[in-house]
Length: 303
Ligand SMILES: NC(=O)c1ccc[n+]([C@@H]2O[C@H](COP(=O)([O-])OP(=O)(O)OC[C@H]3O[C@@H](n4cnc5c(N)ncnc54)[C@H](OP(=O)(O)O)[C@@H]3O)[C@@H](O)[C@H]2O)c1
Image 1 (tube, helix red, strand yellow):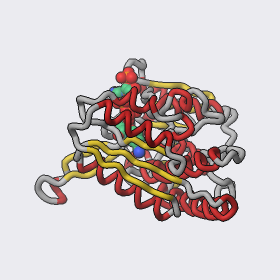
Image 2 (cartoon, helix red, strand yellow; image 1 turned 180 degrees about the vertical axis):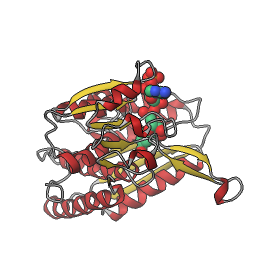
Image 3 (tube, rainbow, N blue to C red; image 1 turned 90 degrees about the vertical axis):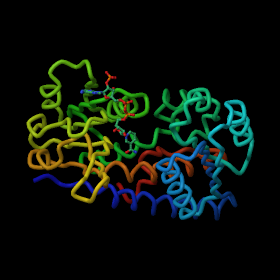
């Protein structure tokens, strides 16, 4: 039976570290980290995510603002808001909640955020420079969970990342590589995916296919990190009800793996704590403080 990696507990530790470090930073510099979250339209799930981010920013002691724009907002008006936030000295982090409504083109909006304020880590300058840039929050969170099991140096370990998105798969593979793992990226064109997965000491699934990864795809003792979020019908909870499951067949794989993240309660909670960490890192950068290796936030609780 595998160790069940408790993402909620790890996220709470990371948040405690951010709060403590921010309190010291604010006391020394007189600067409060500032996070602006921009949301366009009225998608309920996006509003729930944005609300949680704002609440967490306040809990960390940050200056937190939310810009809620109507669905019909034009590309130009959105870009103007980003320009204003880029120029605002009390805002250190800008996050545009995705997805945007269909008539808006997300890529130029993301690229218009100043890289040093891009706390989602999606700007090409951050994606291309994981050593000193702001690291995309979900890969950073997943990597922190990997480090809890294996430490920071993954020398000699085989890692397989299933999924090659710019948002998650590619930066995750880069982080694993930077930590000295031998990394394979698998995707929809990979031949014999089960055999590729069975070679993994660290298996990361970010596909968006419910329970794709089966127990007999997992090497005994491997660490399995499930990034997938798939909403399925849950008639047992009542008519029309749904629940979230991952890309990994959790009940089967936990009998084979050495450690495994559940869904929900694994990688998901880490994302928001990494966003807070990035916002603090951005504020420290703006105050011309040396930037720390910020996907291991403030190493004490993780050391
Ligand atoms: N906060 C969080 O916890 C968080 C954050 C981000 C994403 N997620 C979740 O993670 C999952 C992946 O997200 P994403 O944005 O990376 O997705 P994405 O952009 O849709 O990418 C999916 C990847 O999976 C690959 N794939 C699809 N079907 C496959 C199959 N049958 N076998 C092997 N590979 C297959 C695709 O391959 P091709 O490239 O060949 O098409 C693609 O590379 C989603 O469930 C998403 O909701 C969670």
